Length: 330
Length: 57
Image (cartoon, rainbow over all chains, first blue to last red; front, side, top):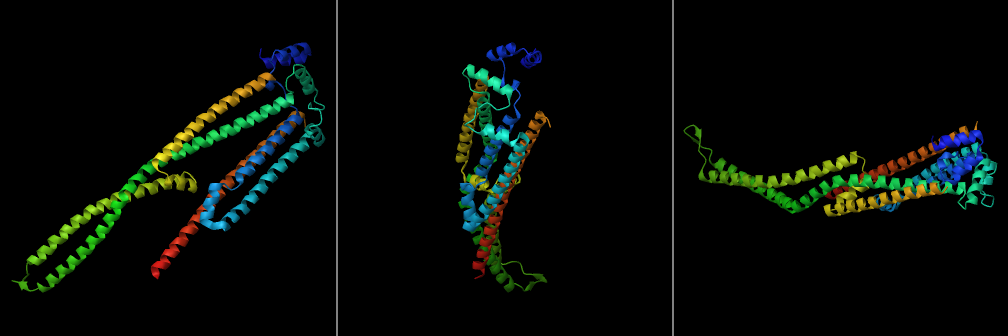
């Protein structure tokens, strides 16, 4: 028979002695008790207040966003954003106010007010079961049911925040990985940039030379128009020399074009990667951040994030253990 | 309404409020993304215009 079944049986038969024994043996867990309406209302209202505080903080302009907006749109851009932020804050406040007001109505304003007053007895008026349990706990010099429940709620919030941080870090690590490849290409692109510029200039120079040689060829050709036995005259040595010269230029030009194409391919691959990242919904300020980071820095960022992740996971484990201890102490 | 029903209703109100908050957070995120994109386009257009102007001079 489970603990819950045992408790139910004792409650049905009114066996208070057995119930107390169970409590003393520490077998009565937090979950075995029903939470009263007043407690539920107070806990939910407190959680809503906490969520409002956190959300309002999150909605405010972050430093990185402020500098990005200021850089792009000046102070006017920042002011426009802050106006919009105020609208969000007002909406958050409204959502919270409405929810709290509805909860208060359901739980009864008077009961809540008296339960919330710190000067009053911590046990909740009219909640006989809780009162009874608090008396037993007080005798055993343990924290009251409400206090322990608040501690559990606080601990649960801490756990949720840690879980949120872990999820965010894992997402950031996943987002950073594609930029390693991007960064490798960036290093390759930087190494080839000088050669590319040089090839472009050489190519332009050669095109100019080809143009001049073609003009010279046209000059020779125009002087060589007389027909030889009904056929155009064969090209002169000068003309042959110019053709050979042009062929030499063309060959040289091709080698520079290869250099140019390799560079363009790198740029096009990078552009494709950035497009994919944009499609995946990675914010533009992140893109710029990663674009500007060298491979080593990204690897270091990932390693630091992974190490931070481990710390957070350890913290989560500790918090869970603490939660178990709080429940055991009830 | 019984006490249990009221507790259930409070939980629903709470969950609904948290969902609304999550939506507001998402909207804010979307807004800032679009806003920065819009500013980037404006800046790019201004640079293009200034380059074209100096080229035409």
